[in-house]
Image 1 (cartoon, rainbow, N blue to C red):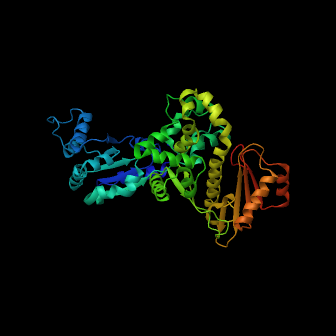
Image 2: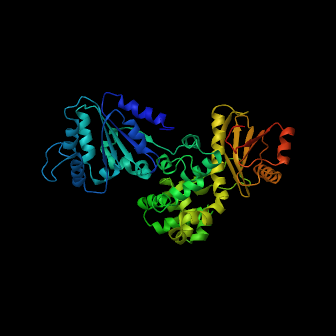
Image 3: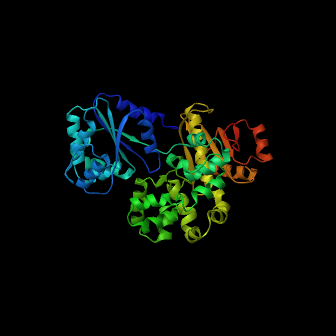
Length: 452
């Protein structure tokens, strides 16, 4: 387990209590919920059940069948209470009960929560962990389904995707440049990391494991989206537009010809499901400021709608190698710069948290202008600024790139006290000479990582 120590401690703190308790653990599919709970379950007495779309009576009966002959029952005549009592009978050891996709049990009726309520009234020491991949359900409708039993939930843990630092640790056998590429495709969804083999190149992993028809990893994002969405044709059209760079409401309106109100509703639903995010610029005045934009936040959905959806016929007909070489590899730089920029921003925020920057920043983010972008902006309590710019592609960070960066600073109205420039392919001589004249300029050549 990499990067999940706080979550493990949180779960253990409830387990160490003498009384029974119910917790909710949720997060997007693939974020690592099952792996976390399997690790937490080591050396504990654990029972688990996978929820599914069945009637209340049938759900209880299926659970009974999975348990085997733990206790006698006649045909379908079995209740949740009988199941729970059978699990807890004749044991002094604390039991952990994990219910995956628990929303199906709630939607089927009240019997499950009623049986938990009766269980807790008997002061039985049991830890019940209710697990869900439906972020929207937990955050928006779970309480209404729980009703009078909502008070039984004593803790809620949301698992978020892990950061690049944890990803880099997992793939430490790979070069930094390879790690960035793989992170752009896999993101922080740790359950999917084991589809890639550490030590293999990005190219090899993509062809063997990601684009392979047998692995079905390339369509994982679409499969999940289609499972939780209705009117998929509308959502696919909007997601396709976002992947092609139509990231404003007006842009989507022009491309799709859907009413603006309809697009807004569908975007809100995608945001609730954490497939899309609305990002806003660092607050510096209003002039030349671009209002918030929408972008696909789930890396599997983004990759699918960037490369596979517009080339679906070829994807089904070409070999993985041929598809990668024709439709993916030639267009990677633009796709990767977005990930590289986010990783650099996160690195600057980490340095600030450790107080390793020349200023201690109170707010950080990026500036999005009408005709430019500043990858990192930070401001301290005295109004002093640190800014940063990123370059990913071939050719290195050039004097021309620096001139454009300065133009963006002018547009934003920022006179920075320090400037950090990041590049995956080095810096040209003109930029290097600037460092000797300007001690406030810091060059970060990240070809081998973030070590200066």
